[in-house]
Each structure stands twice: as C-alpha cells, then as structure tokens.
Length: 303
Ligand code: PLP
Image (cartoon, rainbow, N blue to C red; front, side, top):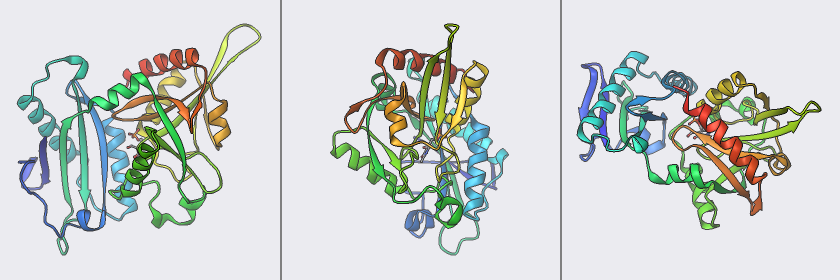
C-alpha cells in the first residue's frame, strides 16, 4: 500500500510507510469515528471522477464542521500516492490495472489544532470485479430511520460520508451470514434507500407503439437520507446523453421486484447486477444482461 499524508511542510504530500504505525491512539478518527472519507478508483493510473469525489469530501467535511485541506493539496498528494504505488508495483495486465484510492480526514489527535489527512492506495480486490460479472444476491434490511429524518435531524449526518461505518459493515456481515452478498436498506416508512456502500438503480424498458423502446433509469430520491453517489450522478449524465429517461423515487420494495433490472453501483465495484432480493429472482435475465452491458459501457467512458 502507498501512503501519503497531507502536510503543509510537504507540497506534494509526505510519503510514509504504511507497514509502520502512523496515528496517535488519541486520534479522534480512531476513538470516535469522527472524520470523513472518500473511496475512488484509478484505472490505468488515472483516478475516475476526482472532482465529484473532492466536492463530496468538501460537503461531508462541512456537515461535520471540519476544515479539510484544499483541492490542490489533495490532487498533489493523490498523484504522489498513485505514482508511488505504480512505480513500486508496475501493472502487469491492463485488464486488472485498478487501484483503490482512499482519502481520509479525521478530526485529529485530541487537543491538536489540525485534522489528520492522508491518501492511501492499494490494488482493487478480485471479489468486486467478479461480482460485476456474476451479479449479487441481496437482502432488504430496515435502517430504522424514516425517509424524512435527514432534514429533521441533520446531526445524524446521513448525507455525509463519515468514518462511522460500523453499522454499514455490521449490515454486510448480517447479509453474509444469511448467504447473501449485499444489502439494500429500507427506511422505517418502507422506502428503498441505498446499499451499505452503494447506490440502488433500477431500469424499466417499455416498447412504444411504433416499435421503439423507451428505457428509464431510476434511483431513490437523493433527499431521503442517503449518500448522493458520484457513480449514480455520472451514470445518469451519460445515460441521459444516450437517450435514457431518468427518474428519482420515491421507491418501495415492490418497485424493485417489478423492475426489468436492478443494480448496486459504486466507484470501485462499478455496476453490480442484482440477481435475487430476499431469495426472489429479479428482472428478466436476457434484458438484465443487455442493459448491464449498455450501462457498463456508458459508465466505463466516464473520467
Ligand atoms: N452509498 C453509500 C452509503 C456509500 O458508502 C457509497 C460508496 O461507498 C455509495 C452510496 C456510492 O457512492 P459512489 O458511487 O460515489 O462510490
């Protein structure tokens, strides 16, 4: 893993040894999960959708009243970390030349004036690439919040990407114990929300009278207490340009069961087709395959 701390004394970032201890035990990111992060994908050494990730990091930081380094400092540290990783581990196969680039900001050590910020770069796992191909089985789980709570209780930080992901990871472990791969959270008022690390998408294809087909791509309402996905945002823009109609919830579980295809989308795993929800087959396999190929092609073209 390549590790680069953001440090005003080092304009391109301070390179550190990821195999050695680097944080104080009083760091509030460690003791309270008090901080924010982003996870990006670099393909062939180029980070995808970097401006959207830096925008979201700034938004998450604002929600936590956290002052984070500026864009230029991030861009330089990211370049140092990605180039550092690639020079130590030169890619052998362009098909698997994928790196996970994680940006982390914590509130810093107790009593410290400044946050702790770093970039870490590691190879993307095989499991995510496999799930793009094979698809995933998902279970629906109650998140316990209603779909209006984000606005009513902003201190819950529901639209921010905070370091407090223990709940999301617990939901994934719960799914794995049931033999499923992933989760779609529901609000307490029965709305479809998001996955623990992904955005929900569904598609409908309708044939019109003149024989042409209308394709509609739908995602849950962005103001329902979910994290606005940079992948969903980028794919919606590309799909619109390719003639798709777009829609934003509210969605209920029945909408998932009635869809022609459902996916979980995120920056590293990309588009993962959902084969089954709570054991029930989703969509039409031939349509799912065709739409997955089309949307994956559109998504691959995004930078
Ligand atoms: N929703 C949650 C809760 C996430 O953690 C993530 C990403 O990890 C996403 C959605 C998808 O966001 P993106 O497409 O920007 O990776």
